Image (cartoon, rainbow, N blue to C red; front, side, top):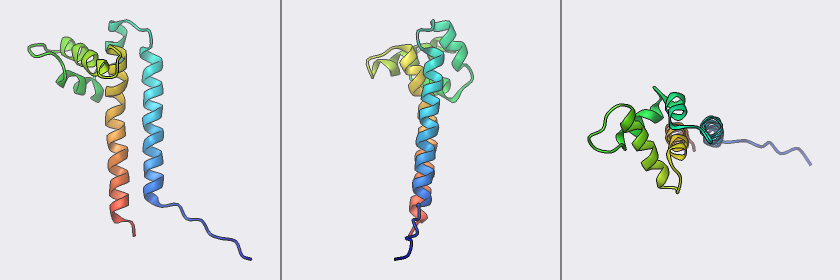
Length: 111
C-alpha cells in the first residue's frame, strides 16, 4: 500500500490563522485590562480600531473618551461584564472579521 497524500484546503488554513489571531488578540487585551482602572483601559486601547468601534456604541451626546468608555461598558454589559469585557470584545471583533473575510474569499474560490 502506498502513502496517502493529505491536502489541507487554503480556506482551512486561512480560517485557522484567523482564529489564532483572534485568540491572541483576546489574550493580549485581556491580560492588559484585567483588573485595570478605567484610565489604564483607555490608555491601552487608545487609537485602536476597537476604540473607534466602542465610540460608535457610546452614549448619545458624548464625545472622545466618554464615548469610548461608555461604548466599551455597553458592549461589555451584553456579555455580563463591564468596560474591560467591552475592551476585549472590541479589540477582537475587527481581527475576527478579517479572518472570517479571508476564510470566505478562499472558500468561494475553492473547488
